[in-house]
Image (cartoon, rainbow, N blue to C red):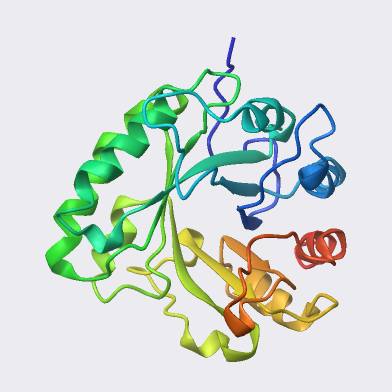
Amino acid sequence: MHIVRAIATAAATLSSGVLIPLYIYPSGGPDCANWAPLFQSIAAHPAVPFWVIINPNTGPGNDGGQAPIEFQQCIPPLRAPNVVVLGYVHTSEGSVERQPGVTQDVNTYAGWNASYKPDGIFFDEVSEESKDLATYEGFVSHARPLFNNGNGFITLNPGAAPSDTDYYGITDLLLSAEDMYKDFSPNQLSLGSSTPPSKQAIVLTDGPSSPPTSLISQIVTEDGVKAFYITTDTQANGGNPYDDLPTDLEAYIAAVEAAQG
């Protein structure tokens, strides 16, 4: 039986955690070697909330079918009381052409076996414009009831703070900054009653080789942003910044925890 977990990661006692784009194909077999460092960090930091995005093939792949065998093997050991697993769905900024594909991808994840079915959906390539808000309200209202016994966790990624703040009202988490580390400044964040930090996430790539503790402290402790992730993986020169875990993953998670100690 798939036991429904409080979707805000009830066992995680800290307010802020990490949103991890796990766009890495797990190796087959019981060790799931490519994901093993993340398993270890999750186990070592049970107070830290983790939102982990799985992405078999720019979405679930195998429309209407079950997950690839490696994901069937490796999502169950990813589960823990402090982890929310999210299925990746790209939305092409709400384009009419993409809308049936969005619904199909959501339905495919929803049809997975309970042992590896996600807890919710990560919608990528999200529009930030008012004219598309109704489209995303439709995506969210369709997806949420299909996961976690009607309480699926929803994340939207416009990549920057949306011009229409009503987007914050339809989601559990919104990626308000996705950038290279060198180009990011906390001053670019919009934090207020209509743009609550408790619903915001930040993901930075091309990060330093050791955790930037002062920045972590500001974002997590002072600003109260819900999820913050920095990876050493790089998008410079056309690289994929999410095809490997950070070289300093364990140190980074420990720094996020220590900032809230």
